[in-house]
Image (cartoon, rainbow, N blue to C red):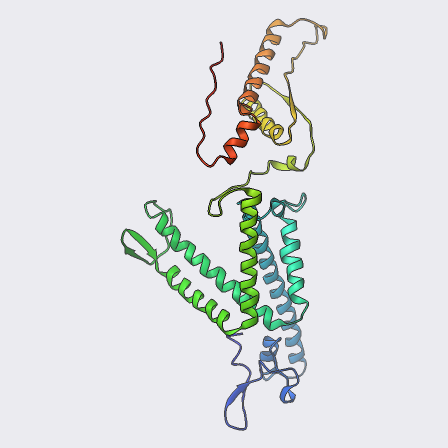
Length: 342
């Protein structure tokens, strides 16, 4: 509304220039254009007749298209940030589950882009939603600018592939000028929103307090990790995360892919407590019976199975007790194994 708040304008009886943009729909006979600012511009362009009607229809279609694109962008942002937070153990694991067909975090979209939006829209207070949007947007931009400045300080010794300009060199750090100025500007704008509007202040700060409280409880009780520690959730392994299995059948051969397949099967079996059956196929020539003895091929097949068993033993070298100690010990742990006889 900043660019449109000055139009359309007219001179009142006192000689002052005023606008009907923020007035109620019945004020001064003409109504305001608070909810339809672009339509207000069209009606005051001096158009008449069919041209005016066509312009109104065009503006309506254009506005609907722009709103749809903006809504889609907001939904994409909500899904990405919640997926990232769940991937770094800041939200429960369920918020990063992907839809089997669309490959999107569907639960995050339903909760944050669906249910939460409907809850805020039910009262019908458009002004409050706009101020809450300003509250969140200014805070997000301020945090983003602060993150850029913090990365420049923490990684000042690293050589970046690309570094935005201009920068101010001070005490060995290239401080990003635009990030500093932008952070100060958005931070001041956020403070203005917080100070001037009480409902937005209480709702926004209350939402932040609730989020921080949930984060603290979730990290300490469920993740069992310090609040400031970066914890990365395990990467889901394809569509196998949605399957239930108790036994894995893995064919082995001389190829490198066979070793990778066994290693992947060990990881899947470790997650679900499943067992692995390794199979080595022996091709019997057509001129020989199926029960013919092939000593060389059998020896090679047994070697392949022994290699697969060795890979499985390397993956399962730590038992449940040692694995629990390694994950929850407050200090570094050294694990030593006895030498095995040849």
